[in-house]
Image (tube, rainbow, N blue to C red; front, side, top):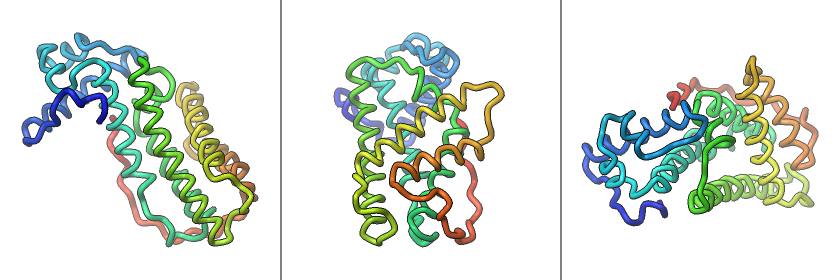
Length: 222
């Protein structure tokens, strides 16, 4: 974690638990205050002295960067890094991945803050840009694989398409999650799938029937 280079990652179970507790408090502060976060606010919420937060994260920028990293780490584990190739062709398994992604965001109150409200200084913005670039890289690799299998048009630019897919997901989710009443996840998935299909120049209705899905416990709200 680049912004935490001046502090050491906790190596003991107690240290990791403390860092997680501080992140939980910081996340809730950000949610409760429309993305505004200060060390003193987090310290009060966690019931600790501000120096403890400085010890673990170095600065406010380090704390916010840790929140961003934590979110994207869990997003990768729950959605992007799942091997769904056996679930059908590109359109079929990427529709399933999109569904996982939307439901992941809907289960995380922090996701709306992260994508739309979180205050960022330039250093933190650079960190978020790095994580978004990772997502685009992952999407581009998936598109290239689909092209090699003949499932996607070869004329599609993988990186541009990947950026369009994730950018649309960010903006649509912020709009959906701040709308009252909130539209169903299914409606959001259907809207976004048409954006994905347009990005890679395929018919949105070409999906094959997916293989039976195993039950999955939704990630805890954070």
